Image (cartoon, rainbow, N blue to C red; front, side, top):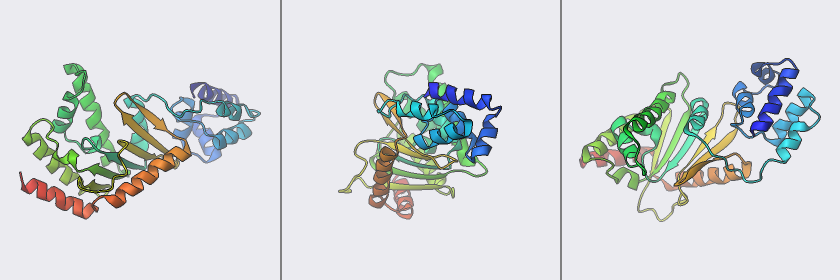
Length: 261
């Protein structure tokens, strides 16, 4: 991916074009060009053909794409994921163990990070905490993304840290649901149907309407850009939304849980 990105950048410069200039000429988003050139985004066959034709690279990029590894699995550092999150126009997030990071308050986020094994050193923990909380800036953008969350109910009952931390987090979550860009649905723990048994994932729509997914596991994370694989996760998310409580009923559940405190 990085090699193809450098080839694209070289061909672009040979034409005397900047990244914004190439993006404008092809009517695509500047972030798309930058991400491909930096090796952060997979160059897809149709896009490779478009670049080849415009930059007169005689099929070089398309040939490179055809020889990319078949397994669509790449390590992803948190900073790279946040680059996509910052500019996304839509995020659909399923979680089953904790409340999603974008909806965590500081005490809860700190308690979650303290459960890491091996444990963070104090300085590392504070850095990770700041990175997590800073991500919530997208909620205060002039044009925030559309955010949809489905959370399995046990995540609301799990007492991370102390009872007071859990109560404050539920209050914070209830407040976040008043934001017009945020929708939350809870999948009841007694539901006989559960389309998310394979674990958490996030669906991302970029400014140029590219659809990607991001999954996490015990030992790493993956970008998923293959359209068929993204489609499978999108269908899982759609099914989860039908199995979960409505946003209105989810607010009622949170109010009942807070009333029990």
